[in-house]
Length: 233
Image (cartoon, rainbow, N blue to C red; front, side, top):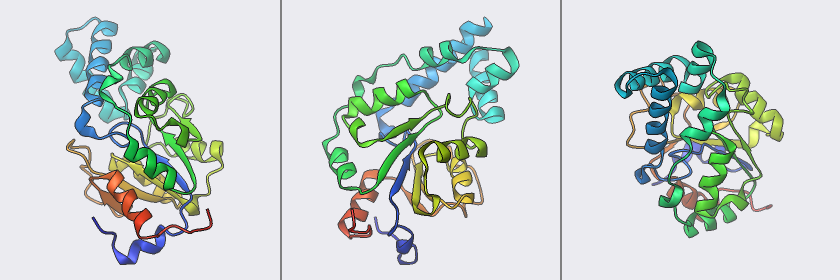
């Protein structure tokens, strides 16, 4: 996969790398996130004392209305978030294996690397440690850090930037949901859409997307190979 020549210059000065977690850091084909989705439905069913079919309808409604089921339960049912986060991330991480290739690529990628997720820090650490790549990331910004305002909330994005002193002019964010890349684009951050088999990307106007790929590691490998990054690191 090649990069358009007119966009090459946008990559040259990137030294802040922001990665979404689920279905971005790991390949969506591994089907890890469906475990989380299933646990969310089960939590809603238990918490509201309804059958799983009704729970899944509410889960979907809250996702589209509030961008997360968690936020919907907090707003409409006064739910405390900690039990929810612990429950939905009680999944089988063993399907994630140490990824030597990704470990090598992250090591070769100059600059600072961060995780920005709508999940919990505990979930992020579990993912990164099972892939054996946690040492490459300087920090995780999770839903608690965002005051439980999920992406694509602009205030959440600004809080992330402030927490880690991100220089937006030298930053790129990789994410599998197109809508979540609009706030960083408005702030001057380059954007990379990681395309998956899930039908997340219904937006018609994607002018805020600088790059697209269905292979994050291959995309990073191309950048490294063709020396698009400054050699000062």
